[in-house]
Structure formats: C-alpha cells, structure tokens
Length: 171
Image (cartoon, rainbow, N blue to C red; front, side):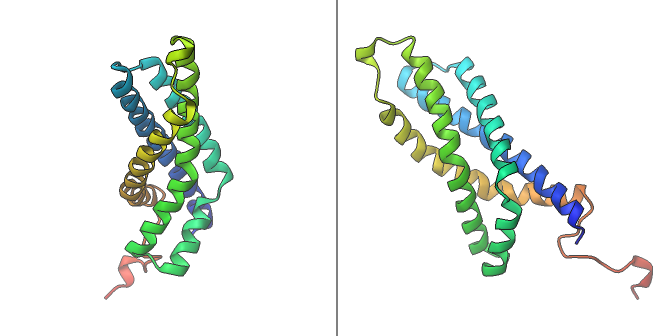
C-alpha cells in the first residue's frame, strides 16, 4: 500500500472523527445540561464544540491512531473483535478529555450565573456526563470509523483489498 496515501487517510480520519465526536459529544453534554437546567445553552454548545474540536485535532496529531489500528489488526485481525477493541481504545483516549473540557467550560459559565449555594459540585456534573459520553462516544466510534475509513480510502485511491492487477491482464 502507498504509505503517503495511508498517512493522508490517517490524518483525514483523525479530522473526521475529531469533528464528529466533538459535535455529538457537545450536543450530548448540552442535552444533559438541558435536562438539569431546563434550557439549551447555545453559547455553551458552540464554545464546547469549538474547544473540543481543537483539542481532538491536537490529540489526533499527537496520538498515532493509524499505528494503534495496525497493531490491533495484527493481534486480532480485521474482524468484529478488533473493531470492538479499537473503538474502546479510541473512546478511552478521546472521550474523557473532551468531556472534561466541555464540563469544565460549562461549570465556569454556570458559576457566573448561579449563586454559590446553588452550584452543584464539579464531580457531580462531570461523572454522569462522562458515563453518558463514554457510551455515546463508543457507539459513534464503532459505527462511523469503518464508514469514514471506506470513504477516505476510496477518496485517496486505496483498495481495501490491496493492489489489483490491471483490468486488461485479467482473463
């Protein structure tokens, strides 16, 4: 396989998954907050989305998810067990950091609008959000990672089955 094209696929995959995770987890976090407060915070959603997108893109540049994927494929093959494990590893890398960032921003935004005696503790906000976001993130990663991979491999001209002989030599 073309190493240069695979690096492009890996970078693009990090971007696609980072933006998608940030969008859905920001929306999930705001919906959790909406249940607690009774209103959807548009500014909180936008700040959470932008902040978590930036952080997830940085994580994607720093952590070599392509190598992690290759390691999992070597150990477990490219079957459903490998996908479960890869989704879990990605979820463990991205979700706690993104959830912490979004809850932290919400916590400080809330502190300026709520009297100190009515403020919930940070862990009381973070832990339920983390649990819900772990489940949402895992499902999202499990479903979307293979879809994005197929689309990006097609975009960059990589066959998932490896190189094929030219059509005129097949008989």
